Image (cartoon, rainbow, N blue to C red):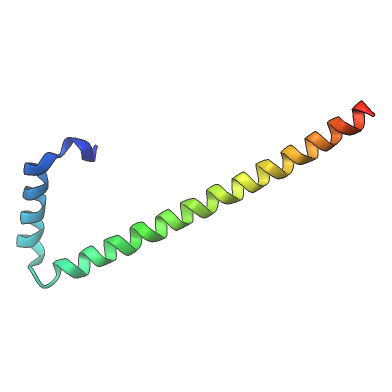
Length: 71
């Protein structure tokens, strides 16, 4: 979706934000948006790591059971 905006669209969005929020408020909004994105990425990474750990744990249990059946 963002790939379709292009440079002219991006400039338009920045100008509208500048007009609506003003030059003093814009850096605060950008900082808050950046922090929100960072927290979202960290949460996503944490959930992915937890799921990967669970999958690996189940995989090792299943492989251990298969080795016992072979004996």
